Image (cartoon, rainbow, N blue to C red; front, side):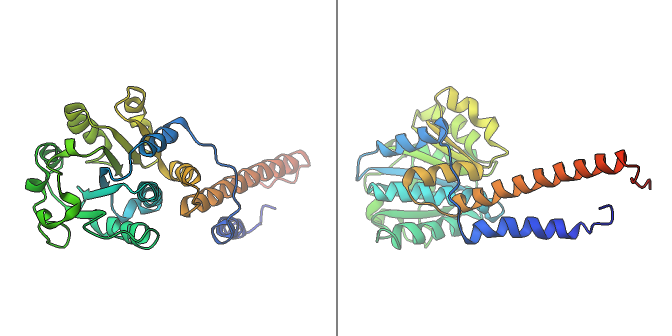
Length: 273
C-alpha cells in the first residue's frame, strides 16, 4: 500500500468528476431562501417591464457566474421582461453578448434593440453607478456596437435607473455587489438582486438579511438552485453533480488511507522513512 502510485488516485478522481459532466446524474438540490428570494422578486415583475442587468465579471469567474447569468436571463425572457445590460468590468461585454445570443435569441427569438440591449463597458466604477442613477443615455451614449441609445426602441422611456423595475447584478468582486448596494440601492432605493462567487457570498449575506438585497446567488451552488427553479438544468447542475462526487471520492480515499495506516501500524508492517 505504501508503494501505491498516487497517480492512480488522481486518475480515479478525474474519471469520477468527468462522468457526471458527460452524463448528468440529477442529484437532489435544495433551494436556499436567498436564491428563492431572487427568483420570487423576478417572478413578480410584470411582462413588458424593463430591468438593468449588471454583468460585472470576466472569463476568470465564468465557470461559476455565467450559469447563473444564463438561468436568470432565461427567467426574465420567459416572462417577456426587457433587459438593459451593461458592464463595469472590461471583460464583461463579450460574456453578456454570449448569454444574450444563447438565451434571448436562440431560445426565445428576442430581437436586439427591441427586447434587450448590451450597452457595453464603461470605466469609472462607483462614479458610473451613481451616474446611471441620474442619466443612463449620458453615461452610455452608445451601445456595444456603437449605435446611439436614442435609436434603440428598448431604451424609450428609460432616462435613469428609476425608470427600471429592478437591478440584477452578477459580480466577481470590485466593483460589484457591495458597491451596487452602497452607491445605488441605498441612494435610489431600487430593488436589487445579486449573484456572486462562492468565496465572496458570506460578505453579502448581511445585505440580504437587512433587505438591501432581495435575493443572493452564491457560486455554482446558487446557479444550480436557480436552474432548478426555472426548470432548465444546465452546466451548474452538472457541475454540482461532479463536485459532489469529487468530494465523496476524496472522503473515501481519506478514510481508506487512515484505515490502512492503522492496520499497518498494528501489524508492525509500517515502514519508517
